Image (cartoon, rainbow, N blue to C red; front, side, top):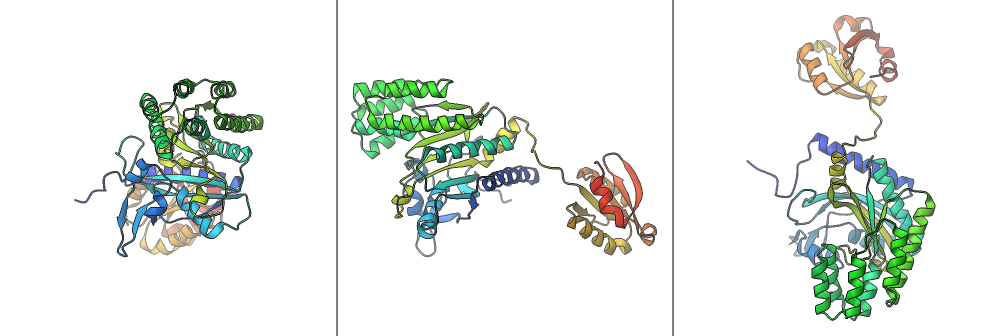
Length: 430
């Protein structure tokens, strides 16, 4: 018996419905903010995807040589593909340019709760602006997605890549040494990160500064930023990074949006291309980020394009499903009327098809009884599927242009004219 490849999943109807609902909400929010949808290939050249991601992700990519002898890989994230598209086809588009994409991604991680080898994301990218209001927009957009999905008590962990970068660069660490430290910080292995920092030559003062900012996780983001600035005052680039993050936080607070922000100066994300604000979102009881992003002003240039600043976020659709399930949050979607159309005799089937088409044109979800079951069995099946109404067609009723309309929840039925059937279903309370 064939089974799914380890780390891959079959999504059955209820799971697929939850995933698509999140995707719909994410797409609706993208339209509200002016983001235009694009679709990029699942398969890209390995060189593109490996160009500016972490060593850990490079090691976990699904990569192979195709029949043409090209080294290719399945995308582990969206941003590299979007950057390629911007460089090749969208470089002359007016700025700002807002792009939305959604789909499946692939990493050879060890399967565990909330971590799959095939997973889905909704991705937003804003190109062309270096200003803090662009970063604030991404934070507020993320808040709107999670709020519109009905999530509660989620929080934003916010940092700035320039804080660590400023300290480590001034301490004389090269890119490889910095990445070694940042990767350990990304895994929250802080003691190991400090040990590596010491080994590669970070000064005593630098280690003290790193230790002090790693320990800072207060409840007042503004006060935390004031304290962080004091502690990194000997590192000018790090101070500039704190100033930038202060502007972003101030804009979010001034907007009136209620975002629970927690500043972490030692926060590092796994992708190496971030140049500014970085953030992740969390919900209580789920010890994994449900989304995250940040600013990457040099990525387009690294892929051969003109310098174009950018900021973006990826929402983890699978993980949001877990968060919604944990919080027992029901999707906030308008209830669609559903009906089962049942022909008692074969002679009535043509009319059943006609009525089904008529109802669908008016937005009623219709399941036509196609198994040739008895009326009792057909009604039992309709009840099992939680259908709102059963439309029953018999020869006698059809001669009078009538049908039997049964409210399945109330277990009430009456005879109505075919001409008024749509109105009867749409006007009635289920």
